[in-house]
Length: 97
Image (tube, rainbow, N blue to C red):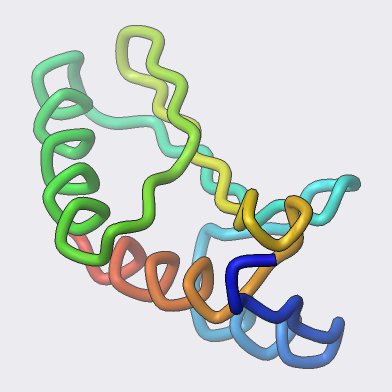
């Protein structure tokens, strides 16, 4: 599975509690839904997320419609489970303005 171990529910819950705005989907993915002030702000947020993701070599699934941006994080190499890679990227994204 690519050397990435799935995290247990308690670890994921603690990480979510420390990352405002993030939730866990029914399928286990870490999810963020953000409404930005404008489409331009949404594009800026997406660019910032892209830079973080590229730096960590781990990329979220992304959906963008006008001012709405949705992100999903799972590690495909771990069978679509949440791993430390997902939590690290979630924490970094949570610090974006």
